[in-house]
Every structure is written in C-alpha cells, then in structure tokens.
Image 1 (tube, rainbow, N blue to C red):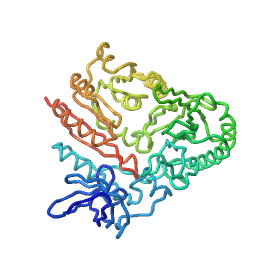
Image 2: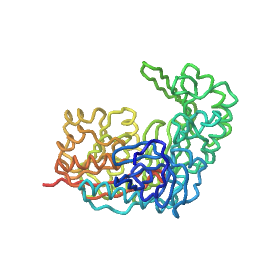
Image 3: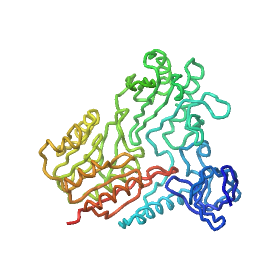
Image 4: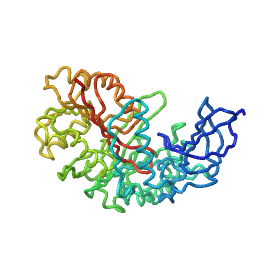
Length: 459
C-alpha cells in the first residue's frame, strides 16, 4: 500500500514521546510504522491525516477524536487546545507524571545508562506555578484581530488570546487585558517578524512567589519612539499599584544589521526580591529583569534541595557557568569553599549581591570565560563540580574541561533529557558513572521536565 500525504487513517494511540506527541503503531502490507500525532494521548482512537512519511516513521495531523482516552480531562486554560503552551493539559496530571517518568527510564536504559532512577517529584497544585510569563503581540489566525497572548501551535506567526491564564500569578490576566485594550485604541501595531514592521513585540510579567514583588516589561521594536509609551506606563501603574518594577525593553532589529537591545528603567525597584526555603533554611535572591531564575519557585526549592543532598561531604566546589550564583550560594553553607565562574558581568554582580544578602562569605565569583579563568587563576582542585547548562547541554569544550579538572563528583541539573543523555554518554567515556537521577516536574502540562543527577569518577 503506497502512503501519501493527506491520506486519512484511524490510529490507536498507545504512548507519548519526548515531544509530547501521541504515538500509535501501524502495520500495512507487512511494513511496521510508528506514527506521531500532536494533541493526542494514550488511549485515544483518532482519525488523522498524514503529513510526513519516512521509512518506519509517520507524522500526522489530528482530524478527529473517534474515542477519547479515559485519562483525558477538561483543561483549565482556554488556550490549551490551540496554543503550544500546554500540550499535555488535556491529560490527567497523574498520567503526565507517569509518562514523563517512563520517558526518562526509556531514554537512559536504551543508551546503556543504568543509574538509579528515583520517582518523579510532581506538584501538589500544578497551576499558578510560573514566575515569568511572556505574552506576544500579534493577530489571531482566523479574523486577523489585534491580539496579546500565546503563539498558535500550528501557525507560527499567529497569536491566540490568553484569557484567565492559570499558569501564572493572578495579576497576569488583568494586566494582559488592560494592555491589549489600551493599545487597541492607539496607533501602534504589533511587530511583524516577517517584514520588520510594527512596534509592539512582547509583554513580560515577572513575579515573586514568596514576596509581593511584581515586574512588568514592555518590549517594543523602535527605540526612537520612547515617548509613545509614557501614557501607557502612567496608566498601568495607576491601575495596578501592586507593580513594584516597570521597564521598557527596546529592540532595534533590521535585516543585515546587528540587533541592539536596551532596557529602560521606568519606575519602581530595579529588581525583584524572591525568597526560597531549602531544607528549612531561607535564602533571598535579587532578580534583575533579564536574569535567569528558575521559572517555578516551588519546584526550584525541590531541585536545590536535591543538589544539596547530592553534594554532601564535598569541600571545594566549582559552580561553572554559575549565572547569578543561586546554586553556589545554596551549597556554600555546607562546603569549605565555593567558586562560581560566569562570563556575563551583570550576572556576576548579581551573584555577589546575592551572596551578601545571604551572608555567605566562603564563596568567590570570578568573571570571564570559564576556560580562560580556570587556566589563568590558581584555585584549589575541586572535589565537586556543579553544572546547570541551557537546553542545548554541555559543549564538547565543557566536557573536556570537566575531564581535565577530574572532580570526584559531578552534579548535573538539566532541563532537556535528550541532551543530558548524550552528555552522560560522553562523560561515561571520560570515566564518570551516572549514579543517580531524580526527575522533577518543573513544567506541568508541558512536555518538559528537569532532572537532577550525580556522576562519580571511577578510579
């Protein structure tokens, strides 16, 4: 049987893959296929239209749910079915955790990595957990109406409304509504990424979970028109006096030219203050508008508690690519000395400030390229190295650096199980055994999760 794009098939969905797609299995004329279907869940019987055809793998678009899975639930967010933000929200939270745990086990065991895999740590309440939300200006995919919300899962440059969003602080929804209505009445238009026209790009709202601090950042395209936004800032601060920080983020982007970004502090404090309780000890952190901070403070406390457990008995710790120093500060109270290295000057300054806030004196932050700093600076050899890389994982250069340092232990915090597994194989070749992995569901209703792991150098 020759398969063709657009061909319709009935499929029983049996599992979820790392992308959060439902996976079914077909056998046609003796040929076996895996078929991936977006927005479908195990237990669904669905009608699909083929989009991609490969040797043993098919990808299809969902047309109809013939028989829904018993694990389907009603989503709480109105955009769940049309945005790419919460692709698993129609699946019961218990099953989300089940399939995420299974995926971690499958990937690591398929690659001949056989660590102790602990049970995934989920959330008691998997809503209102995010401390940072970015809403995009644009138009809806149907009637091209001015909109402020989430990106449509199918149409890259189209936006769907984010009414009554239940992922974040309750202030977000009324702020989005107010901002949308304000700019609808203005002459300003959403930025069009295809041709570079339009002014309005994004509205970012950052909030602290355990203090009252709330920050608004309006991102616009043309920095020469700053006066156009003064009335908005005046009105939004009057309407929402609970905002403690307001920024204008200007981006000047033109094809063939270097992008210029600048932050303009409009009013209030220059940072958010957040407090975390880790193993019954309180820590305070100042968060600048562009600084990275774990997006789920409740699960951040869990992650840093696991890092503390894995770090027990370590004396000299290197926190490489340390950002604003969060992990190093959390570990310093039970270590002899901690060294944090980071190339970004603003992050290093924030790290120094945060160490002072927490009265941590046995930590030193070094600014510069990690490889160059460690080569030219005489430091005691570490018995533990901690890394928390971006989704792309550790580079070959970073892996060689760890191998050269030869710490007895390595703690690796990852937000991407796929790149983590690839790095784990490379570390195995350099003499490190993956001892233990603990999955943490930091991003409920999405396909993402965090893993906290410990590697040990084999003598």
